[in-house]
Image (cartoon, rainbow, N blue to C red; front, side, top):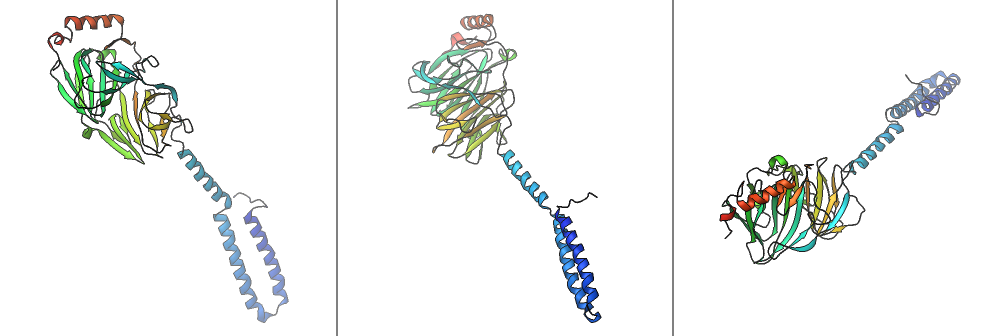
Length: 367
C-alpha cells in the first residue's frame, strides 16, 4: 500500500483521531466511575463522524474529480474539430458568361482558361438558355456528360433513337463512350437553367458502347440534418447513398444550407474535389475566412473532408463534386477527349466517314 504524504487529507484526519484518543484517556482517568457510561457515548459518536469523513475523502478525492472534469473538457474540444485534416480552398475561379452552342449562354469554370481541367473533370458549365437558342446536333467521344436541371426543362435526342425531357431537379448521366451524336434544346418557355459536368473516362473505357442513367427529381436520394438538406446525385451523404453507378468513381451533391447552419462532409482520400456556388454565400474550408458568393468555383486541397458555414441571413446552395483522378494523358479537341493526338485524329475521321461508332451520324438529324 502506498504511503500517504503529511499534506494529504487522509493523513490529517488520522492525526486528529490520534490526538482525540489521547485526550479521551486523560478525561476518563479523572472522572468518577458513575459518569463513565455517558462519557463513552459522546466520543464514540464523534469517532464515527470522523471515520465517515475519512472514508468520503478516500473514496472521492478532489484530484480524481478534477481529472474527470478535465477529461470531459478535452473530449468536448476534440468533438468540435470535425476533421483532423480539413480540405481548404486552394483556388477560386469566378465563372464568367460566354456564348456557346447556338445562341446559348453559359458560365464556364472548369474548362476555361483559368482552370483547364481538374482530373477527372473536364468541364463545368452553368447554362441559361431560352428558345430558340440551344445546343443542336453535335458529337461526343471518350467521356461522360451529367446534366442537372436547376429550373425549366430540356429535351434530348440522339442518333440511336433515344429521346426524353428532363425537368427541374432531374438528372441525365450520359456515357458517350465510343461515339454519340445528339441535341439538347429548351423544352419550355422562359429561361432554362442547369449545370452540365463532363467527366473523363479511363483509356480502357473510352470506346465502350454509349449509355444513359436518367433520374427524375422524385427518385434522387435526399437527406436532411440540422438545417442542411442534400440531394445526392452520386455518392453518399448523411448515411444515404445514390443508386447511380459511376464508371469513373465520383460523388456529386446538391446542398442547401439554412442561415446559421454548418456542414462537415467527408470526401474520399486522394480524390480531387471542387465546390460550385449556385445561390447565396458561405464560408468554405476554414472558419473565419471571407465568405464566397454565387458563380464561384472553389478547388479544394487535400484532406479528410469539407467544412462549410452559412453565416448569412439567406439560404446557401452549392454543388460539391469529387472524383478519383485517372492520372492519364488528356488530349481534347472540342467534343472529343482521348489520350493522344493520334486518337483525336482517328475520332475526327470516324465522325467524318461515319465509322467506329458514328455509322448513323450522316443519316440522322434531330427533329
